[in-house]
Image (tube, rainbow, N blue to C red):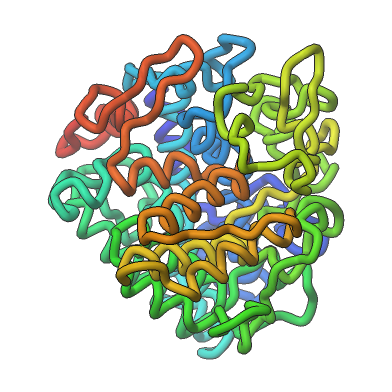
Length: 483
């Protein structure tokens, strides 16, 4: 396994990845003879590396599947049906106890592989690439690299480090690697604090906001490549995880209008879809889709069976690894049967499944949502609700916009600040079911992970509340400590 980890890192020295992505977007041309010494010699080679960073991000072990899945199945809304460790039974049972567990190792390796590609790209642009493509395009490309790197560090924090709220970011975080690793012997690095990692994430996203394009020429590119509003949207998520609510409001106000209908006035014109089903069906390029991972039928251009969201959640077209917990969010009486989001749920063999949110059969080409405009709206609503006193009118309007999009007959009413916060948190569980946000929401608030099925609740102080560090990292990095 040590050799495998070294291979993952060493591959970053050759910044072209063998897997392809969407034919119109993330489709690096194989150039197996290119080394890191020549990878920045032409504009085409530089661009190919930009696409390769996205290819690494959308890998099935990462944002193409398992990172999103793990974020859901740690929570209380899914039940495991197969007891298969390969497909996350240990994650669901809140017991990835060993540093050598596949879930622990593979997510860590792929995220750091992606980070290393970003670092190598940034290094290469400084050395040669900027001269080749010109300053303006170079800034765009580096903005994409830094956004992907920032997203990757944020993602790792959600599983491998204590939440920011535990000690105001003072607890051990991650090794903060900001230069590319091209060979062995360069892995020794002590852990930075959680606060230091968050500071770097925000630095990357701030740079991205300033340097990314405002928009692209097609809806496909505006959905599958980062632009200015992507960076702003992700900052609302990051600041929410830090409980820095005034910062959430500042960022969200850049792309959310003061009153309904809520839209982004500059850059990509984000807004809610009238029908949520449109977000999750071809062409997956709606105004609500801020960033999604594109998939196609080409071999290597999709997550693969045991990593795809549809394989996990659908019993009709996938393997139905996880059913919906009858005592979970679907049991909430306020989520009425006529709500359009209920249409994603089907009863198969007597059990409820999230059968139709990701319904495409093998090779599972549903796009994977990274962040939607609905999340930015609810991030803003929560921040407004938590910073004010009483019932914030705009926060209430935002959460009602989300609810009424799918359930026109219900109006959310709150008479106290806590009732408003509770309504927003409930709406998040309904709206983002199967999109990987439940773990983030529990962690950032230092909440106990609720019991489910045969699995007991996990309190913030319990072993397993956060994951152990990958055994690969511990074996290669002599300065690394375990959780």
